[in-house]
Length: 408
View 1 (spheres, one colour):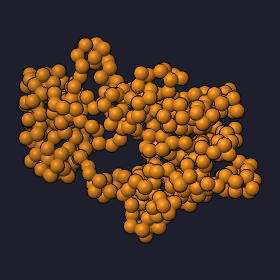
View 2 (cartoon, helix red, strand yellow):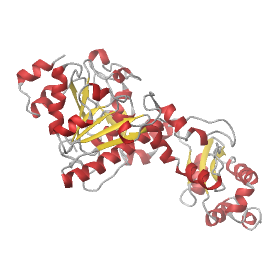
View 3 (tube, one colour):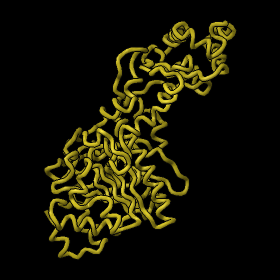
């Protein structure tokens, strides 16, 4: 179906002013846009500097041509772009005028930036009481708890480190901490922020009252590490890296195959019986060292070696035939595997969008949220710098003369 023929998303009609940059903030507003919200990205003169980040398809327009690289294209799809200079009084007044008609404003500047511009929460809430004003910062906004680190800049590795997830991740038990590959220090907070915005909008719809929504990156990462919290709270022992296993279940983790690795999970004795039957070692089910999960955890090294000795005899594909559908199992995929596997195509998780200037499209990750009546989707590419300035401002009641006066 064409973009116009697709059913409207569940957030159709929601108007979001997006003053975010880098990864975390734009990912949150992207989630709203994927579900049908009208997300208007407010960019400074010349555009968001992350537009220059690669990689770039051959021929793709660069920032100096008002284009963007794959980084920007991935997380700013489905959005409009309006170019405003918030350092000028006219730009600030224009944003205030937009905010009076919007449902949501989301920003991830450092603490105090919007206040110094005269566009802080209290000012905008007075102009539009139903506005949901959402922020995402490394250590949160002082309005909802003044962290001693409130003024510290924070990026993904900082959030991973201080939020606890890095300290329980590592290649071997008791080894050094390890950064998680994708930017979970950005993306997890973004997900919580999108959730908080949706919750606040539901209340605003019923009461006419907006509110301040604040997510700290480190708080969001800690929330994902909920096991760390209750384990320490109960035992007083600080969990550390667990390697590729699980501290409470066995066997549970990564195991070698002849051509890579597979993930295998045995959360209970029923699955253990199925596994040892596949291994043609049924006697292991009744061996007192392995008969229960607690016993297997106590003899973890022996269990892991028994299972590894069996799995490394087979390729990932052969193990999939042996275990797939019977036991919690999955081969460890790299990008080549993901692009070749039918699951991700049939689920629309690999989406091709136009890349201005390039001869071929850019492939971006789709939305994993599926709704039967209002399906989310990647409907259109990320915008060029200021691509929608005139049309969007006109929709908000700006005259041609007023629009011209705002041009950088």
